[in-house]
Image (cartoon, rainbow, N blue to C red):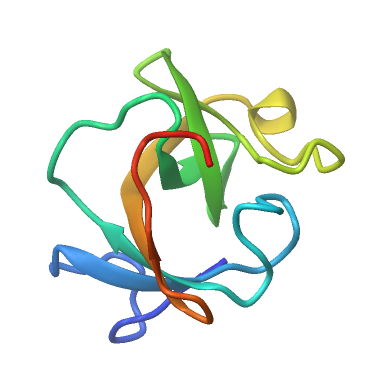
Length: 115
């Protein structure tokens, strides 16, 4: 997953564009989907789709589904049951922002309800 908007993933703007890479969130999200991510705003809830950083992999920004709070961060999982590069392997993640919409290729808003 890559972050856009001025070349820095850590921006001051409330919305940031990110690009999904890889299959871990299929079928909800696919490789190449472009997302809008909100920093701040309402608190993260279970089932939110989030952008996060694993404490064990601070160099890796990921898109995952928030499962439950854990150790001051979040336990996160991908929607693709065949890909396990989530908290089951990397442990607790710190949430960077919440995905609010996919704007390309098929615009769609997201809520905290499983799709």
